Length: 125
Image (tube, rainbow, N blue to C red):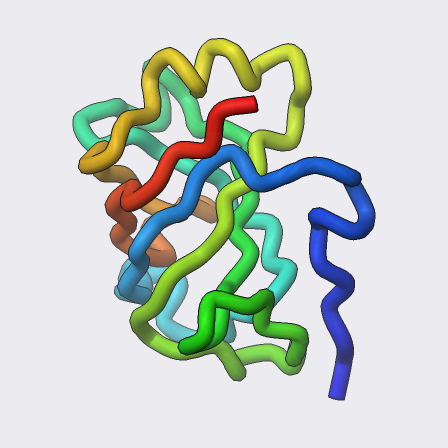
C-alpha cells in the first residue's frame, strides 16, 4: 500500500474547509483513477475555468470515521464521502475564506470535472 502522510502533519495547520464529494468523471477523464493525494484543483459552481480560472485547493479524503484515508493506491478512494480541503497558496487563503461558506458548491477539476462537491464545514484560524 502507498501511504499518504496527512497534510496537517506536513503543513502544521488545520484544513481550510471540508466538503462532501461525489466522484463523477468527465468523459475525457473516464480512465482516471482518483486517489488520495491527487492534485486536482477547485472550481466554484458558476465560474468558467477559462475566465475565472481554477484554484489550487487540494482535497484530502476522509474515511467513514472522519480520519484521513491513508491508502494512496490509485483508484482506491470511495466514490462518495468527505474530504479536507487545503488552500495551497497562503496568499490566496484570505480570498477563499471570504468566498467559501457552508453550502458553497464546486467541482474538483483536472482538465475536466473529477467530482462534484459541497462545502459542509469552514475552519477559521
